[in-house]
Length: 429
Length: 159
Image (cartoon, rainbow over all chains, first blue to last red; front, side, top):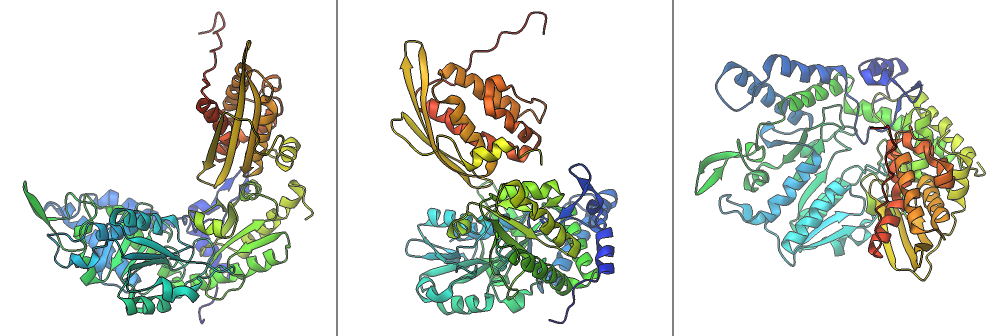
């Protein structure tokens, strides 16, 4: 790796771009925000971009011929180009959605809405009894429940790749799980709990051998590792804007062009049509086919500003290097505390900046409450990955997740606050 | 920190009346979907000439210290008492927990429950403290008992 973590001065400059990081919580404690895996904070540049849209351009894009609508359309489509370039894609293959959850549902519904008489080529998505969908045991509910429901609707069978004790995919049984019956393989690029980065190339290669389509949940990888859809060679890819310094209410589904063209619509209504008659309708080509209703224009523009911001601070490679340095410090600190168990890889190999752990004998909710008392914001619970927690036989974990604005001091603040947990709960600390 | 009073820690470490027992008229399973906490709870209510009496509340719970302590206090405060009194205790607990910290709780009515008064200040934890109580009232319903309490008459001169 050639990229280097941010220097102390660089992080200080980055932090100054995020107004919320200056606030205090709980009777004056400085906010230590270690929950960017749930949602990231927003830099002023993103807030300004949204506000600027509403102040100068606000109107409905792709409708009407007045000046504002033309300018709003140009800004909206310009945002699409910017975001597409960030993931190595063409603008017309980027579909804007509300969030990654909607992106994944859009993909799942393409299968159960096929074959569609008005969409040539949609037969290739049709699923039925005897077909299989393969997921993994480490999926976020957003990349699990839509496939469970797809199987329920179509009669297909859901199968899953297990997870090892170290928190990595156990691919040893893949030959039995991934067969000619498998039509879809949906899995997460970087786990939102374990931090594990999965071997995309290997799974894609095996999927290609059996002709299965590959859907990648890239929510934690687009903001923290960077992705290039050409390199990844997957078929569909979903991510959210709000986890990458962008606004809430905007997500992306990228798809291989010939697939998007053959996919039936998910949400239907205005803007996604070609012609409408009382007897029936025909549909616009992608991406408009999948963008029913007045779109999230300000949010798309805000997300493009977030992409510009990421590049302005040195790009995803430096963000990843920075987050890994913080992860290394946290993992070392936790390893020095024998009453803490990390759930997930204990080294930096194929890993992102998310660390989940359990304190012996203390529920994660209680750990989080104590940390919160010191201003340290972490996530507690099952992080929308309940089956994964069951697999590790824990009801809940405490999760710290990093972003570009986090500091070494914040890792130490977490560890210092954590040291009060054994005292409060009367364990031998 | 003020939330974790000694009494809560004691109850959560040594939950009173824990375990599932016979006899029972209803068994329920409740979960807190945000954190995955679970409780399986049974009630045994006996009809007596003076009205129904809660003879046993038994449970198997998995959760944070707040939910464990609250369920333990629930068992301690309800077993052996007339249902009418128990429902008053439930209403008082619920009022305290949902008061955003305004209602400190009355020890005469809710006993050790007052130790949970700090929970009201943390909206995210109110569900933890209510998990066992919600399971309890659901079990009462399923065993055919009303959980309506007699409204307290308004005092003269107040509106």
